[in-house]
Amino acid sequence: MSQLSPYHRRLFAFLSIASFFEGFDYYALAQLLPEIRAAFGLSVTQGTAMASVINIGMVLSFFLVRQGDRVGRRRLLSWTITGYMVCTALSAVTVHVAQFALCQLLARLFQSAEVATVMVFAAEEFPAERRGFVLGVIQGVSSLGAIVCAGITPLLLGTALGWRMVYLVGGVPLILVAYLRRNLRDSQRFTGEAVQTRLPLLRVFRSRYRGRVLLMSAIWALVMFCTQSALLFWKDFAVTHRHFSAAQVATCMTIAAVGSLPLVFSVGKLLDVVGRRASTVIVFGLTLLGVGLSYTDLSPSVLTAGVLLGIAGTTCVLSVVQTLTTELFPTDIRAESFGIANSLLGRSAGVISPLVVGMLSTRLGYGLAVQATGAGPLFAMLLILLFVPETRGKELEETAALS
Image (cartoon, rainbow, N blue to C red; front, side, top):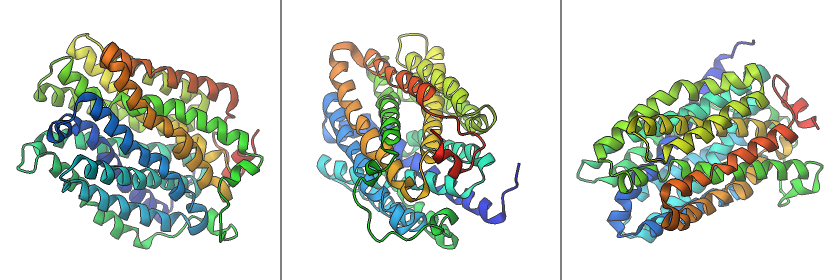
């Protein structure tokens, strides 16, 4: 296995740090939903509707992601990091729910575009035999950011600023990330392509890859329909249905989050050793089990185990799908293809999911409503096994040509 150059190690560190703060900020809403509902006087249904409105930003991020095929990965990464740093910090000073939702929608837009750009950047720059490992670790660091958010949120809620302090803490350190990007260069694969002055909208659908982008979009939609709700509503479920105290929630989440780390950081190695298809079976199976156990009336220890598997599964499943999506398209349409599959079509399910869970929860309760979303990863796994080729150990030029 080839060694990483000093530049590759610096790039790896930068992308990981950016991913850490993305995970921190993304998970903040799940941790703060009860407090934000109380601050703005929202019911459970209104809270889920607000979450869906905020998630529209993930869909709109497609229009920013696709610019990576024109302006380059490095420049777009600078735009997105700056954008969601500002919007996250502004979320802390909002005084009306509409202002908060708008700031968070824009933060989601920049955040989702940053994630897509990071993954495309990493896939293009690192050697084939390390690609799964690198992408897995970067996604794992995002999960670590979420874990840190879960760990310090109870402490920050005790400050005078309450939930607003979480967004300040999540936004301000991104100044460091913006500073560290100054020595980055664009990916060699992108700079080797002819510069594109204009990008016809949805040009991938006029290429031979239109069937593949629809397949990956369906897989993303099925996955995101589950992952967008699996952890978002757990704290609300634990407080309102299981009557957990804030201390019990914090203990459960801390144990589960820390316990999930070995699984989260091993998925990249798993992808490179056993391959993408075998990893899909293992990872998607853990996701289904975790979502099923997290929303039950079983003992707190079983619930904690479920949350552990839920955190690990919903993180690792993204590593699998992100890796496949970056590998299956050529360089000149890689960013746009990732944006269509992940943001425009795939993450539209992330907007719908909280609304569906909110409506079902009034009749079935949070438990059954969220558990029903587990059908998504099950069908996504079947699509991968039936229609997605194995890409382990192959260069991007080879993987894009696979049928």
